[in-house]
Amino acid sequence: MLTIEQIEHAINANSPGSWIPGETPIWRRLSVEDAANGLFGLRVGNKTGQLQSASEDLSVFGAPPLPAKMDWRTERGGRLLAMQDQGLNCGSCVAFATTATVEAVHWINCGIMQKLSEAELFHCNGGDCNLGWALAAGLAAAQKGMVLLTSAPWTDQKVCHDADAVVRVIRYFEQTSINARKQAIVRGPVVGGMKVYEDFSAYTAGVYRHVTGDFRGNHAICIVGYDDEEGCWIARNSWGKDWGEGGYFKIAYADCGIEDIPFYSCETESL
Image (cartoon, rainbow, N blue to C red; front, side, top):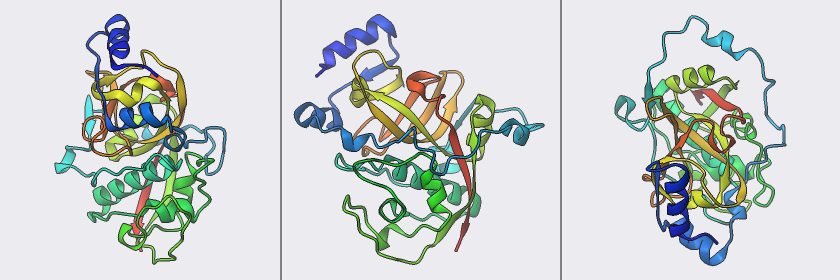
């Protein structure tokens, strides 16, 4: 297991001043339990729900110039609900990233703020705590409808409540080019993925760049913004508000394979 001092040394040697490591709750738990499998449930090779990569740039042809920065934590007063914690025991990151994205997009476009259930989405549509889930599978499942969190609170046990759906995804889109990804984020958060290395669990602030440590697994996240001046994506994790910057983090463009995995945006409607 790495030490914080080793990470600090690696940052100073490879990317001085970029980010600050510390003993976060996730770092402390992994250092004792080394129980990481439940954090990394993104199945990159699984094609469930994945759209064919097409000329998505056509959808942004003639679009207005992109702003240099977009951040849905503050845009329009903020359009992101309370930070969630998936726990260490279930590879459900795709469900948490999908739910955060759908909630924000629905609030932005429909003016309705509703906390939706990750558990019902995941457990009742093919998610598996041990095997994880494909990145686009969450949005494909959300086309059937999503229920309120109060109807189906999070549990890592496979339980379906058969509650009434209140929101559904009408359609979702794959973006692979940088321009298309940013154009999508201007309209709302998107679902993305990244490779996670040992040093990431110690992130507390700054623009993360992988500097040391072994590969731990693939992880789904909600991308809530970008910043061209700092050269980074702004993302929402599902490791609770005591990790990172209140549960959020910045990651350098092209780091940890984040741009090798498609981003997925969506449109929603109330039921």
